[in-house]
Structures are given as structure tokens and as C-alpha cells.
Length: 244
Ligand code: 6PG
View 1 (cartoon, rainbow, N blue to C red):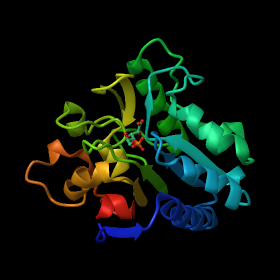
View 2: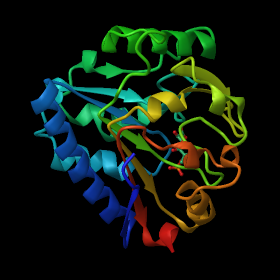
View 3: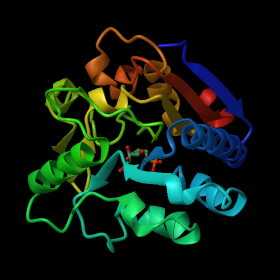
């Protein structure tokens, strides 16, 4: 992995604008090189402005060739206020000309979180044309991640056994807060990406950022420190509040 880069901006708005430009550039490059691009969205609230800027300033992206996935999801209906799917549709996907078949949600309508994880894994194998055993994890062009104040990323929480899973690309997990049932990509998938971008803002993230960007003695306490792309770039997009 190349050295992680940190880019600090006065505000989340400015960090979001710069990250949107970088994502747009990377997606265009991917389409030019491989005729399609793959983008993994994160959940939570931090990426809302990033999504809105992508929709308003980059509506001319080749959306017909861009496929969107989520790094994790809450196991709730897609129309639930806590759904990452719902947030992404309201702030981005309903505002750009992306074909419905290019949007790959977690199937939270299935009976259990395990069913949704198994279906998502099957979707990844169909889309990338590879099997979990034979070819290793799929390689996404852009993975967006947020980080909780406890250092969690996607729905991989501190000291969770999920952090050690390396034979599945998608698994159910339990969050410490409601909604507790989650489904998430595993670290091997996130670390297979061509580019990983953290967008982190706010003073409450400072402590987690210090260990997430460092080499903590017990990395399982801070899942963000385990995100180190094996053959890709890692960039932290920060506001001054978080980076101070
Ligand atoms: C989720 C996210 C999660 C999020 C962090 C930060 O489903 O909630 O994937 O990992 O990125 O919890 O959330 P905020 O951006 O709301 O601080």
C-alpha cells in the first residue's frame, strides 16, 4: 500500500467538495480503462453533503457505466429513516441518471440479516464473476468510509469477531446501538479496493482518528486502523475540527 495521505480542510463542506472532485476523476478513469466503474458508499450522516455535491456538480458523470454498492447497511426496510439505502437515494441516486440495475442494495427485505449477507455475497460473485474461494475478494474502484467515534468502520465494530473474517465478503454483525442488526462488507473486500477514502469530521472523532491513522498496539480496538488497502490508495479527508 502506498503511504496513506491526509487532506485537511477548514470545513466538512470544503472536504466534501474536494472529495467529490477526486471521486469523479477516479470514476471517469475507471470507465475509460475498464468500461465501467464501481463505487461503494458508506452510511451515517457525514457523507450527505458529499452525495449532494456529486449529484449537483457531477451529474454529467457516465452514470450509465457506474455501479453503486454499500459497504454496510442497517437491517431495516429500505424506506426506514435509518436506512443507508434511503439516505443515498434521497441525497444522490434519485438525482442522477443512474439505471436502477446499476444500484446494488443489500436485500433487507429478506427474513434474516444472514440471508441478506448471503444474497449480497452472491450478487458480488455474479457482478464480478468470481468465487470467494478461487479468486479472492472483488476489487472496487472507489470505497467510501466514515468512522464512528469508537473507530468503527462500515459495520465492523471494536473487538468484534467480524474483524477476523477472511472467508466471506459479506456478513451480519451486531452494533452496540440501535438498529443493532447490521450487514457489512468484510475487511478483505475493503482492503482489496483500488482507492479507499475516509471522510471524517468533528471534534468527537479526534481520538479515534489518532488510532485509525496510526499503528495501534491492539488494532482490533480500532477497526479503522485495519483498513490498509493491499494494492490501493488510502486517503483521509478531514475537517480541521477532527484533525486538530
Ligand atoms: C453506518 C456507517 C457507519 C458510519 C459511522 C460514522 O451505517 O452508520 O456505515 O460506519 O460511517 O458510524 O457515522 P457518521 O457519519 O454519522 O458520524
